[in-house]
Image (cartoon, rainbow, N blue to C red):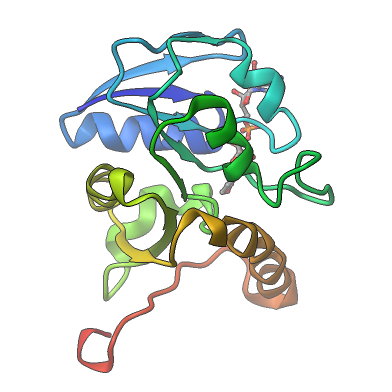
Length: 183
Ligand SMILES: NC(=O)c1ccc[n+]([C@@H]2O[C@H](COP(=O)([O-])OP(=O)(O)OC[C@H]3O[C@@H](n4cnc5c(N)ncnc54)[C@H](OP(=O)(O)O)[C@@H]3O)[C@@H](O)[C@H]2O)c1
C-alpha cells in the first residue's frame, strides 16, 4: 500500500518503520507537509493542537482515507467539533478513522514479546475499515472496532485513563481486548 505518514516523531516514525518492514511503500512527511496525491492512505501523527495547521500544508488530501492518530492532551477539540477526527473529516471529506492514539509508540518494537497479540482500538467510517484493519495487523496489533466516527470523541478521551494507568505505576503497557478463548 502507498502510505503517506505525516509526522516523523515517535508515532509517525515508528509506524513508518513497521509498515516498511511489512512491505508497504511509505512516504515520510515532516512538519512542512507535502503532496499526498499518490497515497492510498494518510496517517496523521502531528501534535493534537496542530491538526488544522498541519492539514493546511498537505496538497491532494481531498477525498483521501485518513487515519488520525492524534491525541488532545489538556486541550479541547477544535471549535465546532467533538473530536479531532471529525474535524479532519470535515476538511478532507474522505473515509476517516481514529486509530493508533490508544497505545504507546515506545513499545512498537516490543509487540512481539507479548504472549497474545496486543489490541489497538479504531473507530470510523466503514469505507476505511479494510485499510485501517490491515495497517493495524501489519504493525503488529489486532484491531478492535469501537464504532463509527461519532465515537472518536470517546476514543480521544480514553487517553486520560491510559495515562492514569501509566502514572499509577504500570509505566508503558500493551493491552488486549478479546473473548476468553483468545486471551
Ligand atoms: N508518543 C506516543 O506514544 C503517542 C501514542 C499515541 C498517539 N500519540 C499522538 O500522536 C501524535 C504524534 O505524537 P508523537 O509522540 O509522534 O509526537 P512527536 O514525536 O513530537 O512528533 C510530532 C511530529 O509532528 C511534527 N509537527 C510539529 N508541529 C507541527 C505542525 N505545526 N505541523 C506539522 N507537523 C508538525 C513534528 O515535526 P518536527 O520533527 O519538525 O518537530 C514531528 O515530526 C500526537 O498527537 C500524540 O498525542 C502519541
